[in-house]
Length: 405
Image 1 (spheres, rainbow, N blue to C red):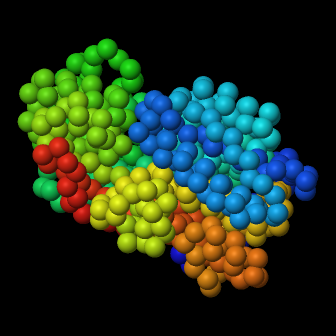
Image 2 (spheres, helix red, strand yellow; image 1 turned 120 degrees about the horizontal axis):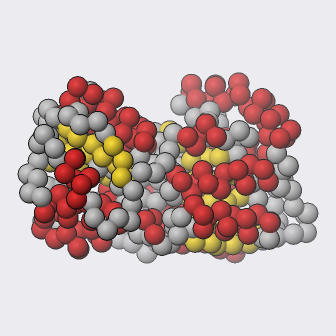
Image 3 (spheres, rainbow, N blue to C red; image 1 turned 90 degrees about the vertical axis):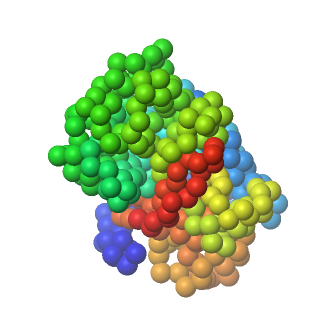
């Protein structure tokens, strides 16, 4: 953490200068409500997760409004459905930016959506907060306005690759859905297991096909001991049906966003044995336990709402940073995001109410969230997320291990 802070301190002045020079910061009049956009995948590939993110944004905004708002002003939340589709998302972002005049767009999930709206947000000086994993995200943020609450996909690939080796598999094949989420994940996986253990050159497939017969035939060619398929639930369901149909008896490995209850309901007992992984909240954290109460969930000791927790943290961090900055100037808010999360604040807070009270009392805070401890590297990418690896047994996910990356 200290290295990230020192690097960020060194960069802060330069990043701020670039942001002030290149971006036209979104600054609202003091008598206006503060408009924030929630752009979530309520349908499409991210459909199982978007509604929880949406609900989290609204709960935090409603709570803060009930307590007098931020900077003495109401928070006005505008919600749009990205449909997990970049073209839809760009149209929605245009509306949020040009009609609703939002200063931030929160909740984008798929990397293609986050990257798709980034040029609009960068041009308008609008803050982005996402749970996306493409390694292209920090590279394309030229103004220090993007904050990612998700581990980048190379981390996913390395964690799953590490488990695969410890399970004793010696040969692999890899194919992935062709999108911005999977490329660097495959690189991470192959980097850990070793290219010499990959029997067929890793390849990509397009979603929405009527059949995946030829792709699966190529994937299981030469009979590898295990296959790795990072995907979304809609396409993975069809791909796995074809794997089962072709009689492959080796180990199938994927990501947890592809093996949701909807997948298990369709596949049934044939899903048993699949290994999958995903970044998860720290389930012993006070903030996570508060989230469960806020969302009306019982504490089962297992991971719930991995993306809904991030939605809570996104809105909380943005509003805390706004109060800390004392302005709606997005360049100043972006700097304050570091102060309330990754700075050297002595007072740890787990929710927006306590954080706002502490800031108003003149205290320096360190917000620790429900999705992670919320510390960012110098590029705005979250550090220190837990990663959970599980196996499907009797239709349920049985945790193999939890790691911290």
